[in-house]
Image 1: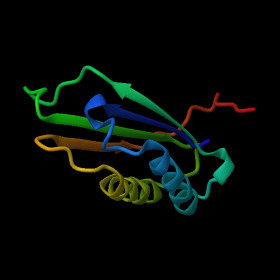
Image 2: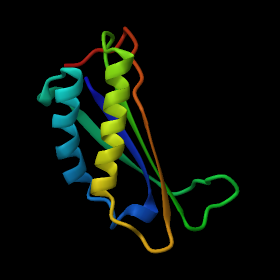
Image 3: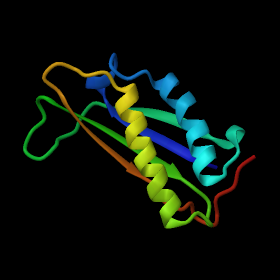
Length: 116
């Protein structure tokens, strides 16, 4: 824990330094929700097919899900989500003619979650 998944449009391949983002994200998560740095695990999933509203051209999506164990307050989750959105802005370079639609979700992991 935290389990972090980043879904991003293929449009962002050259505009999004994923490793730098993850290395900046992990300490941010630790500082806001009291996690251990070595427990942060991030995986990236490239999305080929997507739509935003009635469009696909000129759009990109970037969605980050950070699964946390029980005990984090809604206020801390909101603070983390806002900080992650700001981090996205700092790590995604503009792409000519493309609007990036970014979102963050912070669900609570199920009680069955286990790690080794």
